[in-house]
Length: 540
Image (tube, rainbow, N blue to C red; front, top):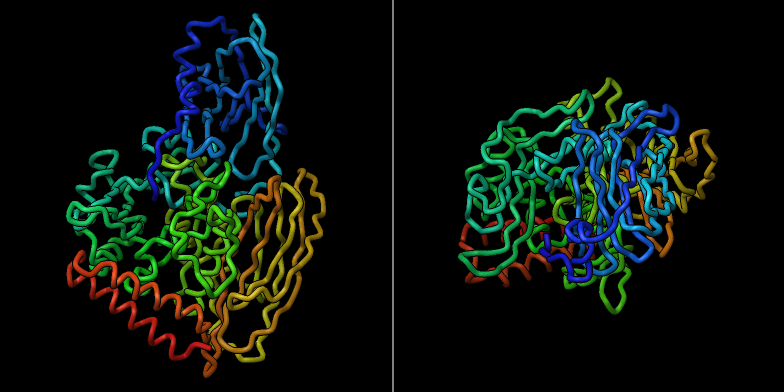
């Protein structure tokens, strides 16, 4: 992932706690509660003054905890908050007017209050109303790209109501270095044992990120890939990557692609047989999008991608990810979608983008990992998707389908704000756009029923996605995991322009790596190139 420093414009805010001792401050004491039960709950808290300064709360209880988070990419792209345990909080503030916002994951409506602080203590109660309860329906959330510490994560996952966190405790950025000796490792000697905060909120601590930026001491970016849910440090450096995939699978790991536009990403998919594709990746934030020109040279020409003179728009970056995922599905690589934030590195809360997995028998970590791998899931940055295809859940494979088989889609899309549109995708094409009904729910959300049928002509995949529009042309989305229909004698044929893009990317990378990478690594790019060329023979 790109590196950045906190910009100077926020230094005053970052050191405000030190400066506050030199000013007259009053105590703000508060409590965040569930609006229905009245019980104190853990949450994320923002405190900003009318003059644009930011402040952080502390727990008012000796048994409580508070974790400050201060990350900024640009003057407009920042994340400055405190995650609080389920206790009262306190903040010492100079006299003035303040905006206080509390949020908790995706299933509660945010609450904002305006508070005036004078010379005397002030108290405030902030109710958060749950608009939907996913666990009640058997769905449990996770973030597969985490860079928070094991010390802080128990506080954070409860404040974000995130069921599964997979911190990348082994992290290496130099070629040929085993991740057990990674230069970014955290936590020391970590046992492969589940850390349970309660019955439905857990941390699995043994996960690895290869994020290669240097080769033989020289800057030469390859990219990132994650190994999730393994048992011990992998003792193999990258590249090549084939042996890493074999070793990881022997330990029960899943392979997660991270971002689609890294230099080596299109090689990793066929060579490592990658399991997961991050449809919501670590460039999609609560705050303003900032990576306008990152990997802009890889922008595909087989689909229209929105850009400006600065580079990608946020919508363009999302569409680039969707288009790449669809192209790879059409090539026969049935990756399952996931979501990762890289919270800890980027200005984004943990679980802002998250993947929900369907566990009708109740939560277990092992069941969650199995469900993620099976594609019984959807990814979201806002809305929720509950969809069945011919009565089957997401990820289902319809074997022995016929060319006349239809796909009956039922369920609902639900959201905290009205949906803008719902789309049915077949083999990468938007086959149907469904105007959402946005029926008000008793809990303050909106529900749009789904009941439609699309034709299936040959081997195909089908999926539903939906979008919310927010102020400033911001988009939040939910995207399901596709179902697959296998029709004998009628194979899925990818688009020629998309496969030619993959071929071109491999040719460009082979040229760039000449004289830099060793022969065994170059051989993997040649093998990937041969695979894409063979796929091109059946393209349309």
